[in-house]
Length: 422
Image (cartoon, rainbow, N blue to C red; front, side, top):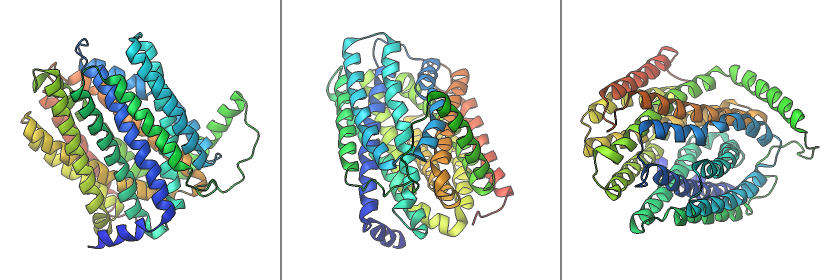
């Protein structure tokens, strides 16, 4: 198969393998940490979780970094990205340990959230830096297959980390702190793995030695840098349109995520452990969709182009989500989770490729940070919208129909602007 051949060629690239190792360890740690937080907030027996509570938690954890994201982008275009991976993961390991201690100490919720926010803040730098660094370790003709393998492998690593966290949580009661410490260990391993990469390899190319700006200078630098990044993106309309479509699909994914959490918590299980097991199955089904997307998306992009691939993903989700989700039963919903994983990851691979191909290296950090901000805002906005619509048990025909309509509108909007980006 052509995909297998391309993967073999890619994996022969030593620097790509090293960068991939950093991604896998970092995102596996993310999966462990995020599941620990989710189970602590949603499935703790003493907490009566509602859709509004879930939305509030997502807002607390994600929205503040819509402000940090632009700073990350500007700094990623000035700092050595290898050093960002090293010190960022070391800092996350330390902060995750603090979170574990706070869980054991049963501190007030605001202090727990402050600690979780700190870990997530650093995450903005690491994930944006990984995407911005990929073109430095592969050739332009290998970007599609690299985007099929690298981010998808990272997502699968996060899924595997989440699965491990679910397993630990199910086997040992009150084990959230242990799970968080497991994530801290993986962050430490990611930091050590980054040392295998040469400092200058991942860019940026200009001399990073400069006077550290004052806070006011940093704000001015960020505003000017993001304005320049937005102008650069506006001159590359296909990349901007791909980002807009991906943001719309992320909104749909976020709304359905809240619905599945509520279904697992209340509608499908009488016991906490049963709900956790069902949520773990849903995560696994979505992960299988991610893996399938990694295999078929390069072929699909070759046949349809990046725009056609995103259109096909959105269109298929528009049809299959209501066909499967309206049963509100675990079996069909797990199939829907697979479809969503496939469609969302397939569209993301195509979008990443489009942005990396059309955005100059000096602007990639800023544009991918903007990408990250759009992801966060779309997800939190979707959670807030779901909280307004969802009943206590999570069963809402209205939500599924609205999501299907938005998927369809995204597909139609892309199709009307032409079949291919390239």
